[in-house]
Image (spheres, rainbow, N blue to C red):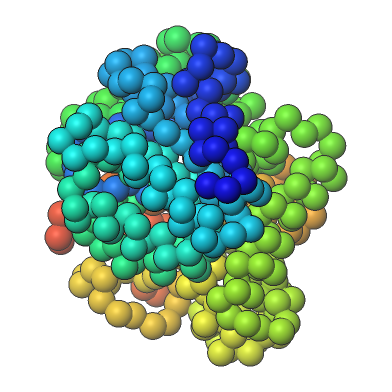
Length: 426
């Protein structure tokens, strides 16, 4: 490289190469579940692993936790672990330089030698990056790739699809309420133990042993009641501040709103979606996005959204899936006994994070009783959408009968979920 030796560029990204351990102290003590998932992928499958998700959600922190585990618990040599971000200003200005640095990275890997672990962030900034990953994967080089980028980037998504069969995607959303409680009460050992025991609850429910599940739910509910004050406070904070960690330390509600609008809304609507759609009026998309946020968990359809938001049906129909793709909303359709069948008609939408709704609607107060019911449903939806056993999440409504959420798994097995919010369990 003409401008600078490659080690000089890489050194600031890889402090574990030296004896400087300050990077460890900067890591939070709480580890999100995706850390364990990525570590399992690295030990059990041969594919590259991608970590996608919204901006500022904690992807880089999760990667650093993976690296820490490889060093400390799996005793991988520090020089076999390499992290680099392709938004580095020294290489981002030149496509030739970007390609060169990738090849120079691979020069470190020797066929038949030890396995290297390459963690490549913002990889969508490397033109045709998927061809590089494909090349060295197919040549069976002893290197494990963990790549990360913004899922809202259409460039990243389209490139990712070309690696079908060669990449395992791990999607990281903002903290769910369960994770939020784990983080806030992480010093409460008894609470952590109860939540750990809750983890096997999902398989018990799905196995269909209703009596066993009911007994365990009742027992765990009684145990959790000892932390009623802390959990109630967590509900208030989560409904207000959501699951983006960088929002939590901000005291002024105006600063919270500004941060979320700038980092999570405008960048997606005015940059990422404009790159994909070339629309001249992104405010139209914002208008019906505001409408969706104003009707969380309420049955709607494209015609109704168009009529009540003042945005033509074509724009609504084209951009609903894009708002979902860019991690602004979660969308489910009406239940059908044939999962994944193409269906048109009514849907329900949820904000991917409650604080996004608060920021866009400029409302930072705790929701009233009626809206809290929708918030509770949103919190449950956010949790079950990450269940790996799912085939589909939908809702059921026929005449005067309605079920908030229907979890489809195992081909033709269903778990109906009705969400209620009360001050005391009944």
